[in-house]
Image (cartoon, rainbow, N blue to C red; front, top):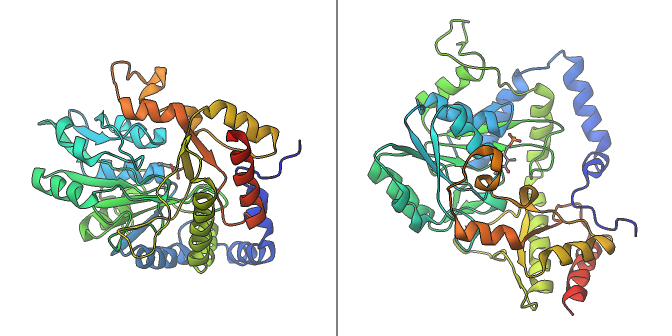
Length: 370
Ligand SMILES: *Cc1c(COP(=O)(O)O)cnc(C)c1O
């Protein structure tokens, strides 16, 4: 059967607004603006204001952003950083890259860091906590995590790669700790046409330092003040992201609408566990970067979806970071995370989906369990 609902439709993202994008690309390139420049500065201001942070620093991608934060805060050999295994390998990779040790904590019912379990994994060497605001939802109990980090004098760096615009008690994802990092990878909610990312922080000194470190540690007058790296944003990505920020509210609204349709259409099936639905006026404002369900008979359901033209995905190939043998976390046991990955399935969710397509997915899943 032909594909009726793609998991993500890359060409469509461009085609929907092809003329606007081509105008932006032509305008930017014809001025000879390729790296950093006025577009990047303007994007940084607009993005910081959208997130509710004092500063935003545009970087090459979110992974670099996380790496730069750890590097700038002096986290390295002998230090431990607490994070989750239910995340993209990038979160953990950067901890290892600076020479520190990742320490995992299990997930809770919201599929994010179980804040109640964090105290149990802290040691005298813990320097930072890296919560991951996965699937467009801030961890439950974020205030308790902030309090714990403050009490113990730990840095909190949020991996908010998937949570542009998400909020908890009115506060934006990425603004709870010393810094937060976002991804503009094409499939992300605010996607560029290539790699791009940003760091947000309210700390003026850290912002200055990161601004230099992303550009080889160079200050505006060319003096080298720090060790750094090359992680600059391309001007064309900044120009496109400025344009897309102009209608990000509509994109988020549509994502929440689709999540609502899934919730309505699937909540009668006892064999699947759905993520929390979008609510108005509650503690959580979720932006539904992904729609991740837990399903009995997941592999058969996935096959049935495929046979009926619905593409689904396993989060990161179906494994937590600690379950990839080559990474050497053999002794680590995270029961809830491991159980989760046996049932986890991602359904298509992006603003370009039509109501008919969503209804079709709902119908296919219902037919499977009927
Ligand atoms: C996408 C993603 C990243 C990496 O972002 P890049 O911009 O591709 O480097 C990191 N963490 C999570 C949770 C992600 O989803």
